[in-house]
Image 1 (cartoon, rainbow, N blue to C red):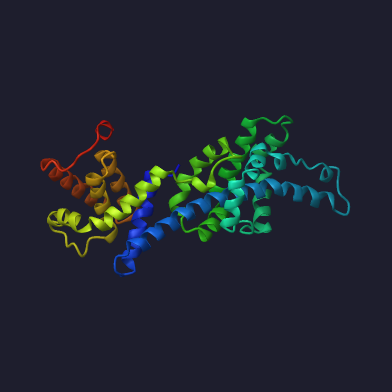
Image 2: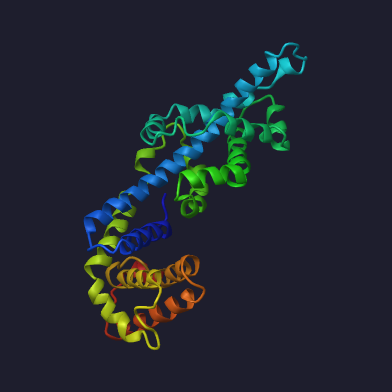
Amino acid sequence: MISRRNIRIKVFQTIYEQALQEENIDIAKAEKQLEFKFQETKALVTAILHLVYLISEYVLVYANQKASKHRPTEEDLKINVKLAGNIIMKQLKQNVHFEESVKKNKIAHLFDDDLVKQIFLKLIETTEYKTYIHTAERNAIDEKKMILFIIDFCIFNAEDTTTFLSEKYMNWFTDAEMIKPWIDKIFMKASTFPFNQMVSYEKRTYADDLLRCYYEKKEIIFQLIDPKLVNWDADRVAIIDLILLHLGICEMLYFPTIPIKVTINEYIDLAKEYSTLQSGQFVNGLLDNVHKELLQENKIQKTDYAKKN
């Protein structure tokens, strides 16, 4: 489910972090760091879903507290606990891979009761929640719709929650946008979804190959870039721009199934998002120049599939 865009981000971040350490190139160390980034993504997904589960279960605590008051009202004694029996959440808790991920990533005690309570109290004031609990029948569509609303309202659009998660997981800012669409797919098979295999073999191979290509072909690719740095001092070009350029040219030359247009557009977007104001234009111009040169020299070999895309 992880996108190639997110893989590119993780690869360039890994390279950038190692470059800042000013150490000798260590591909093995870089590969371990990249693996750690993939594990961070798995942990963040698990944490988000575990928090949703805690919110759904908190209604039982809330109902018990209301009923245990010295003089509970009739309303206190009739708290609707429908959310605690949500079908999707029950399926998720039956998923052994999910439970293993919670344990492996030490998420069971990540969220304190005060945070869960604060989120829950905001949730029960929403029209969506009130409509949900006053619908007697359960059906898969409404159950899923409620959980997706909780994720949207209580997590992705709740400043307190996003602040907490960003403090615990540095990858929140790069992964959040990608994770949100994942969750809908996870819920399609909540009881069996393989949390231990969130990155496919194909995508993981692409990530490892791209990382190694950067280091193994670095000198060759710099020889393509250097002559085109007209009016640019290579030592003053943003290091992120140089890394993105190297990765983009790696894809042009050594990844035959990835269309040229896709490669250029992706690295332009990454330069705009992660580097300077001028980086998008700079990366665009240089990749375009290198591309034209490589075409003239017949050095780009793309598959028919790539050419059509």
